[in-house]
Image (cartoon, rainbow, N blue to C red; front, side):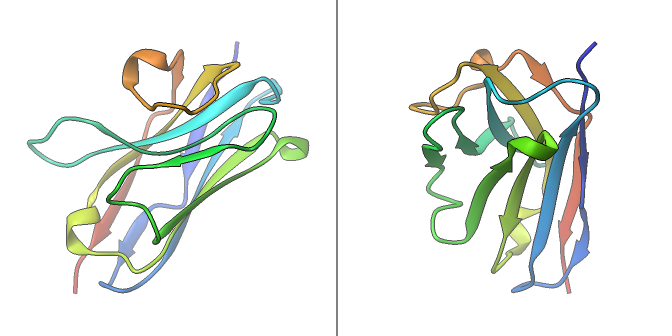
Length: 125
């Protein structure tokens, strides 16, 4: 059974960087778009970034545009979210999720068929 496992979260100072990883166990990600979401305390989960299956199309929420970079390595069945210039308001639990044959034209929770367990990102001095 396919599972997603996030890693790379932690505590970072404002202005710092983190790279989140999303890996699968035993299943190829070739046919899945990979989406990244986050949920801050007391707030709804929101889409952050997405990378599609075949053409590598990407989508970024306004809050991530210009600071975050989403990528994937199909040979490793993994996805990544490089987060730069982090701000305290980026503090949240970050989740990766998959969308079979997804194109990343939009990024909503309803599109996703599988979720990881989440990794905490805390931006604080």
